[in-house]
Length: 156
Image (cartoon, rainbow, N blue to C red):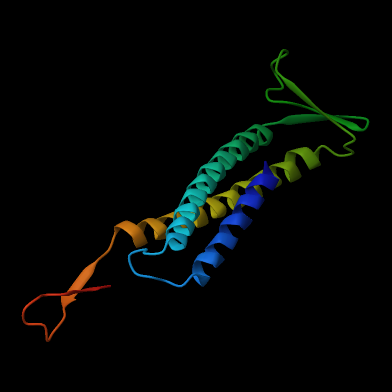
């Protein structure tokens, strides 16, 4: 899943670069400009949804691993969510020499993953907002002076 998110983010950034290089024509009179803008918007929205799902997934695992109580048994670390519950679900991590790796480092990795996915979600949201604003939130300000018969608005 991580590779797919990275590929999508790379695709969106390449598409944004192409959009930057395409000659701008007001009101999207070129088909290429319209297709690239639409594709960029759709990919940004899909990237936003995937990033939010990844944040939820990482957040769930972060909360789960932060409440582990672990016991070292040789090269295996056996963790449970509730050490007082005899039938609680256990998680066995083999090849671990110290349970601090599970309770500390793994929790830190999930926290870093949450932060990075939030940043990615914000970038995708900003990209989608910019495309939406460019298309649907056009503001007109001021009158063109010197035109007595028709009033022409200047696009800002």
